[in-house]
Image (cartoon, rainbow, N blue to C red; front, side, top):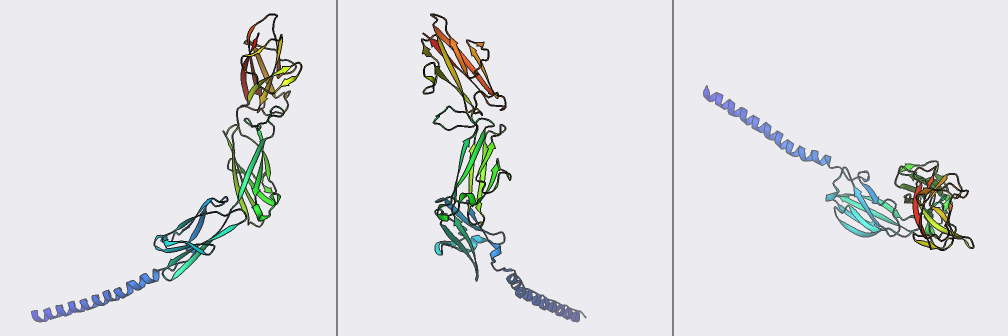
Length: 341
C-alpha cells in the first residue's frame, strides 16, 4: 500500500516538473519576443531641434541642439553637417556651436541621428539679422546749438525709430511688419505694417523703460529683433550771463565765485532736460532767492538781475528752483555766488 502511494507521488511530481519546465521554457522564448515588440523604431517626430539665440546677429556664436522626450540620445550616434559637409560626429553629440553668417546669407545645419538600422534627419536654416533702435527726446529743452544729446526727464516724451539692416536682401524698411512692446507688454496700437517708429512717454513708476520690437516681412523669410533700455535723468539748471552788449553768453556756464565790476549783473537760468520747448510756459515755475530772501516773480521768469550798491563788494548767493507742474518728478535746484569787486 505504501509502495503504490509512493509511486503515485513520484509520478505526480514528475508531471508537475514537466509542466513547469514547459512553461518556463515557453516564457524563455516568449519574453524576448515581447521586448522585441517594444523596441520602437526612431521617428522624426521623436526629435526636436532648437537654436539659441533664435534670431542671431551676424558673426554671433549660435548653438543648435537636438533633444527628445521619448529617446535617450546619449547612446545614439549623431552626425552634424553644415551645408552638406560633416562638421561633427560622435555618440551623444547632441549640440553644435557655429558662427552665424553675414546679413543676406544663410547656412543649413542638419543633424542625422542613428538608432540600429534606422535614422532620422532634423534640419534648421540659420539666417542672421540686425536692427538698430534710434531714439530722441522730442520735447526736452536744451540751449540753441547745444552739441550734446537732448535727454528725457521723468515722464519725458521720446521717439524711437527701428532701422533694420536687410543687407543685400533688398527689403525696404517701410515694407516690414513691426511688433512693438513697452516694458514687455504688447502695444498693438503702435504695431503694424510699415510702423517703423513710435512715440511714447517714460513712466515715472519705472526707473527705466524697455522697448522691444520684432520685425518680419510679409513672406516670413526675414525676422529681426531689437531691444532698447531708456532711463530718465534728473533735469539740471545751468546759469549763464546775459551781457548788455553781446546778449546771452552761452560759451561758458557761470560757476560760484564768478566776479564782476559792473553795478548790475543779469543771470539766465537754463532748465536743461525739462519737458518743454518754451521757457515762458506756464508749466514751469521759477523760485529765486538772493542772499536767502525770496525774489518777487518778474516778467521774465528765467532771468534775474542783481543790482549792486555803490562801492559794494563781496559775494552774493543766488539760488533758483524750477519745477514742472505737469510732471511729478521734474524739478531741479542749484545756486551760484557772484562776487562783486
